[in-house]
Image 1: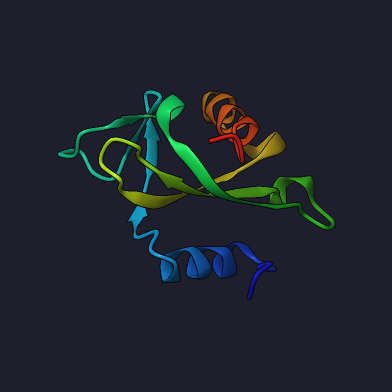
Image 2: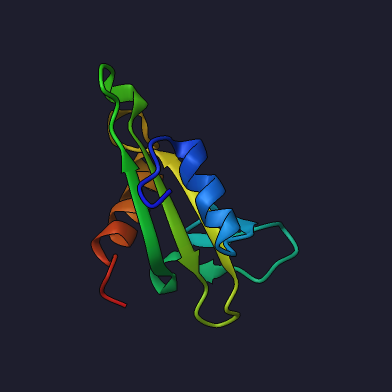
Length: 104
């Protein structure tokens, strides 16, 4: 399963490859829970990126990232709506992450 067809497939693939944390983007930082030290989203290394476009509905656009915190080495996933359905603040950070895919 190299090219997942759904978001669920992408998440399964990433988890099988060691991306165990489910990151959340909070105030520009990646966190997996409130007690953890946050990684600035601008520092995250984008190791995998899957984008899914809604075949009939632009509101179905999703993006799934396989991310690594370069300080701790923790690997996890971040999934979000993309395009028109995305939160504008989140979209700004997602665009920054996707523009760095393959450059780190």
